[in-house]
Length: 631
Ligand SMILES: Nc1ncnc2c1ncn2[C@@H]1O[C@H](COP(=O)(O)OP(=O)(O)OP(=O)(O)O)[C@@H](O)[C@H]1O
Image (tube, rainbow, N blue to C red):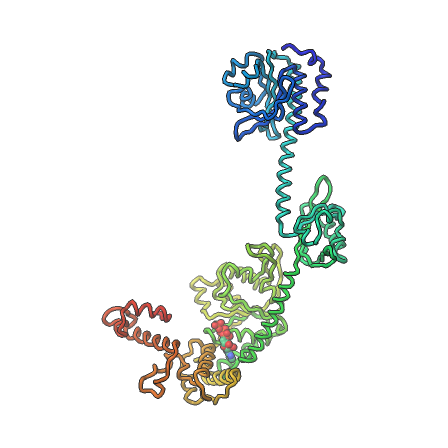
């Protein structure tokens, strides 16, 4: 390799390497680099490129040729000497007759190229970013000094390419962060270590009613009311980089017009080049607080109405003088004084909830809440959160932290209605609270301790469920510490008349009517009935009887279920009375039931129920379904 005169002067060559590139970055840097490289190497051309893997091409950052820059130069890689550089991943030197080696490269011919020297440029991960090459129109023999100078240029080119790559990545990240900040619904402000605002997103501008440019540089005490800035100062001092703290409601934010709002704040700390920064995510909780207050107001109203209703319908008092009821009342008084878990068992409508209430109001906990959970009415997926509460974000839809019923009942009584319907996995969790008095809200690792007395109720036979494996035996024993059995109405003898009179009076008062005491015939009718729906059914019958009768004696005959009364016959005094749709349905239901009984449950066939009634079996079946009759 014939060394050009200038290249022999190493000091000058090295100066050229640095000259023009030290202060420059980006395209100016590359232009200075290739120009000086061509001069040092004494070649006609020099270029530095970026490798485009998607198109398998090289695009020049800068191309110097015959004393001028060639702009926007890009070329495909295959069948060119550059391909060898990229494939071999090392310096490639073609000292002479390059066109013979790459006859299919059109550029070589056009440029009258004779010799070539190229080297790949790698990123930090060892991936090819591009290459640096020189080309000449005369041979370029091997000269170790020139090669090492070339490599120095290559090292500088690679460093700049890496810097550009990092800059691009940084810009992309910045854009992502900005997009996130711009689109966030919550106000986000970044504070430096002196708690001065260094950045604020549009939501923060809206919250503070200020433009970001006016916010930047303001101290936290400028937008925090009263003592809040001092509190924030304390919070930030306690926070290490990477930590977060949730400040649910202590901070009050000031707007530009100095109006204020309570804020829920998430504070986090991060470190950059040894400096601490803080991010505040702010949300105006005025609306939430208002909603909470409204809920509290509505709940107390509901409570008030519930009490009023209880007074009105007498649900507060457990009526009954039958032996069964007297024993039950005595047992309630006995157990109420203790903290023992009570299991109330009884058919539907017998008054289990009333019994639970009686246990609570007779207990020392009567001034604390009685909280009811209907285990059958809450969807399986929500039961756990209903019981134990949840943290904000514990699951989709958990937009705010919520107290569970156990926490609400702290100090009072928790009434678990329909406990037999509780799913097995929840039974295990319930057992733990009953045994240890502690639980973790959903999404929280913090154990909460509560002092709750549990009264559970069911109309199911839990011991049978235990035998069938649908109810945990350990939970059953834990609940069944003190069992109370509420007798069905049919076993309460004169209580039926007592309750009926009490309801008759109460409903009449509500309707503004005057009614006679129950007729002995009515009492006979009432006591003859089985009352599968117990007291709830009795209430309904009395109410219906009052509505059906315009005079002072209630009309029990039409108010009682058809199974308990005769189907209206044509020769009866009031046979001309028009039946209501409900009454007609009752009549039909009773008739179909009778037919089924007579046919021993058989529907189709000569001696089937459908034949007895005189309708096709398919019609019989669909009527059964419509009327809710089971075979
Ligand atoms: N001994 C009683 N004295 C007065 N009213 C009663 C009595 N027992 C029950 N009631 C009334 O009967 C209705 C049904 O009672 P409650 O809801 O307590 O029954 P339950 O056994 O809990 O029913 P379910 O099993 O269907 O939940 C209520 O209106 C209640 O006030």
